[in-house]
Image (cartoon, rainbow, N blue to C red):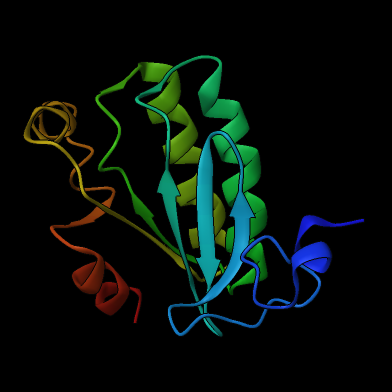
Length: 142
């Protein structure tokens, strides 16, 4: 028996009886990321402190599915990410291309000053749309 059914409809673990939150529908809650969906876009939060060779492909797979379910418009919160390897950047570039190919958009926000400086050195700040906040990211999705 599901935990939520045991303790009633209002239990947060009750996935069968869940109603959409005002913030958005829960689309994903994995070890690596969580995401909430809105009618025309999704907002994801990366939970990993590092995006490297192991995490990059997993995030790419999870977030590509989320983006496709929401018109390929996705904002990603990188607040908890302290380090990103070249493989992790490659995964973000692939996700950006997948969104763009479907006439969608990928927006990054919550990037640390160190990561932003690294993206600027690699000139990837010209490729990615980077905003300072969630509200600005959602606004940039158009």
